[in-house]
Image (cartoon, rainbow, N blue to C red; front, top):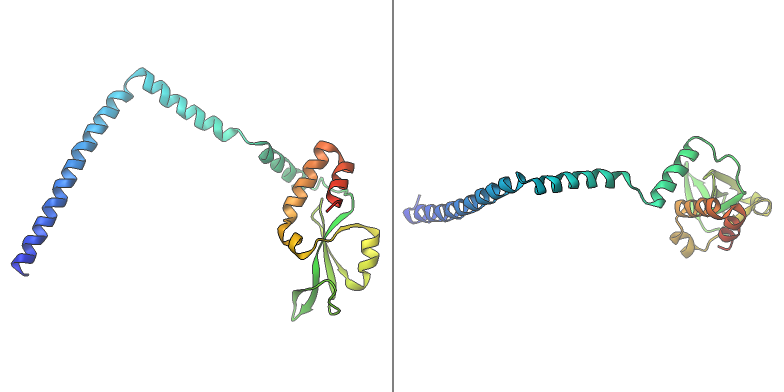
Length: 179
């Protein structure tokens, strides 16, 4: 190895080592100060209080979290068995090689329409020739493409169920059908 390169290596090493030694002394000083403070009663009380606040914060949930958890339990246990017969039109499809392919609602090749009950989240595939009969017999929300893309079914479902719980099913139905 070139002597100049070796000297530069040693110089760079010593510079880094000196900076590290300074940082280590500063760290040791801070650790000593921390140890002294931790032994005072007021700091011990503060640290204990921080632990209690953290533990209690984990137990406190906002209203939406409580509602979603409760709703999930009801749905998971099959308790949402009757609905107000409101469906969201979720699209028209054709079957191609065993796959469903979305098409425009007015596409003459469409084979079936997909509808989702906004309360039970049950999905129904209705042949397009039965569309008018189905939509006459049920309340159906048909959104334009832009609104549908902005409408998350889960959000619609959650808002409807929350509204029904607080304001009654009739008002919740009226509000959701304004869509």
